[in-house]
Image 1: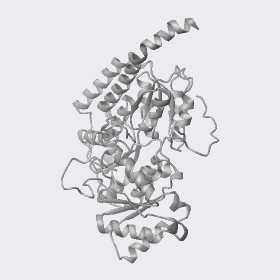
Image 2: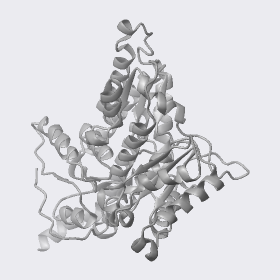
Image 3: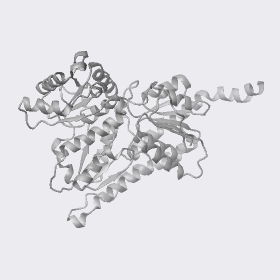
Image 4: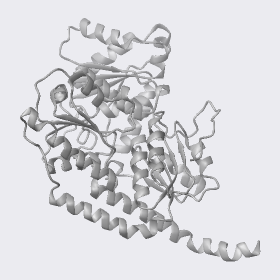
Length: 473
């Protein structure tokens, strides 16, 4: 593996990630009746509303405390209290999330004290207000997402009677992927609590009249009862323990924790289903419970067979692929596995996240491949300036990641397969399906067809250069 060069710059050029509070907003959108207040400037809230709206093609309401020069010097307590009161009166939320920005964290606002005073002053009971420290310099939107999920579970989960449901905690994926996971769980006969669930709040069907707070999301009562679940299935092998809601439920309430990667590709999806079967049978005899799922349904077996058939069909094209893969750590890991399974060589794997786990687990994957003889780089906490530099003098012919990677097409003519978040220069980013056997096959087809398109587009020029220009020189 090629080691990452030291980066002495104090700036990020064309960042590979979004802001930390943006991930927090996405997590809160998966809670029923939630509303988010961003304690910071109007500009921060506008940037995040715009980015989420462009990806999901939905109106996204995010309140702001409108912190200005006066609030920066004398404190933003009054601004935040006014924001909370306005949100409560206009949206009537069941739960409010307060996310901080760089400015609020830098001046040292005590958000817990302010929100407690607000609730006491208004004599409000039964309205959870969850504070999450999410300064932009504290991490990427991926860290913001996981930290918010963790804080929500820590705040709401309470000791409850044991029940037969399975907690399913998911990373930030498309709404199409969320629906597919719900379909697969239902097909397996698994009774579950999905957290967070933004399938309807960020991808709602057309309806009239307009609703300020779209219906849907994980119910607060279900989150409270996650402590009594049969087990937790957490799709997050790259997250730190300090941000793991599954680990919290295990340590505080004894809920068994099973961690799996995002089910993209044959091996990861096999692991997803085998883990579901293990959970279904886990402790059933000792607890006197019934098994909640057993063998794969016939429709899923057929989907697996079609994926294998598609892998055979496309392998003869994919072996020419040299990929740069970027985005959120869970997605980078899953796409890397998919490429390795199908003959595409991952040359550069990059994330704007600061977690160190992604490098460790990817290195473990490459260590298993004794015959993998290509040079590769794993870049953490990086930007597209650095990724472009790494692409030089390598035969990279495909990029896989979110829309910000279009700079690779513009400056290095590397075709981009759009995947992850945000997809803002195409429509349908929320409808991109990549998980499960069926989603993996669709994803693989998109990658293979992009490689073929690039090959045919440049075939004559490459042949001319190889057989004539090279001789002239």
